[in-house]
Length: 210
Image (tube, rainbow, N blue to C red; front, top):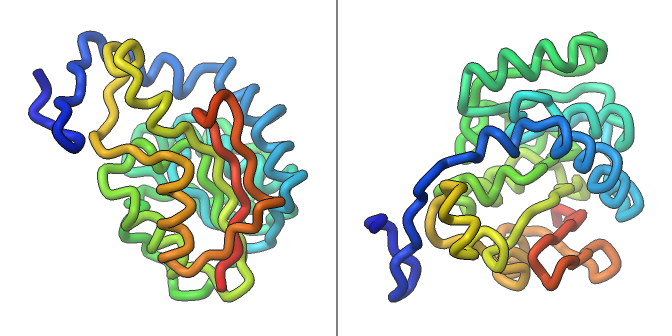
């Protein structure tokens, strides 16, 4: 059994880690681009100077930022150099509007209050200290800036069948917990900019930095 703990319950073991097969698949990318990105657009995601956390190998969030949210300058970060390299190639058509860099979402090499949009496409639930990543998004955003996120919650991530084939850290969040953390970090989360779906297993939000 995994040594990770969540409360008093042991996190189920991962027998086969198939994360990469899904996270970087074409199907996952098209769902993100054609469905999730457009939902965030309708919820009010917009900005010209953008940071993406967690590029994956296709640069999904960076592409949505440019094509749907109006970004003219995107710096996209991932902790995995191979993902950064592949995302750079996948988004070559976006030219100098997007820069890909190796970087940690909990310690971004970005100045305080220097961007007006942060984009997260399913990165937070992979980050061990996801609360630190939320705080870091608040730090780099200027007042009035937006955090546009789409995430799976603990109801999905912690399902035993998913844990068996997909490795994630313990202590994943529910929607209410995520919203509470956003507010603690200095965000407003209007009801009209929060969408729950699939039995509260999928959440999308556009939060405003106070």
